Length: 135
Image (cartoon, rainbow, N blue to C red):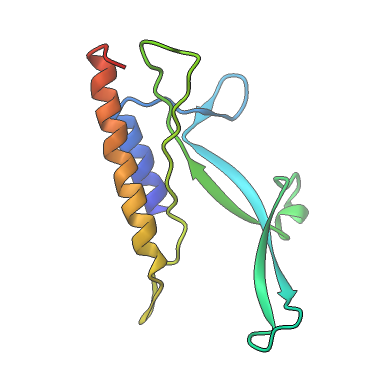
């Protein structure tokens, strides 16, 4: 949640708009998505017999439905350029890794951090260029 909030704060500072709709009047920088985690058996493999597989599912409509899924969030920002308004450039990264749990380090977090750390200054540069009427 700290990474999500930091990303949103950075996007606000870069004057990006919230692209995700709650309803016809409200928008957000966060987009919720639901997923389930399944234990899947490996076929013909002598090592670990199962692995976890994540599948996207519709957002739950009731409290009972919500007990069967996990919720994740995408974070996004939108900057409308001064020219070519029908064109889209998407710059993305992910920050979904575990990082560190006790003494166990999950090194994929370095990959996630470097990608996310690159997206935030790119947003700032595009904001600066848009304010100058360049993009």
